[in-house]
Image (cartoon, rainbow, N blue to C red; front, side):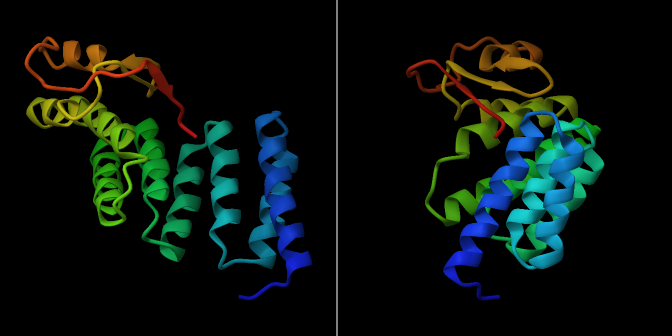
Length: 186
């Protein structure tokens, strides 16, 4: 679907306004704008993504996963979509589907030769693997995560937290060191 420059700018502004409203806690107005975008541009993933974000911020993970699934149907080559939907499945306790989405996100990151989401996907997949009792696979993922890596899963977690939960200490895993950072979920 082609849209002219003016309409494109209006589209971008509407999506940005929906995100702003969602983050400000006005889910009703944010959903209304996202619904408007989806109605006018059902084949553009941004409307589905922003509505998924609104549902996420309202702890409505099933609805968020449904919207992200539609975004994936429209663009199955974007790692971020699998990362987001994987997190929603994780919050729903569907760790098998979460791990599958994180794995697909990793495959796509490799396909695109883009490491932007790599550590985040490995960390979340390790967390899902731990909840599934798949400690060996979790530890393999953590071996490829920086020693100082931190992210928010069900609470703020460090690589050391996951290693402890997996029954191992950090020695011998071979993770890299680097400047301390916290990866955001958005």
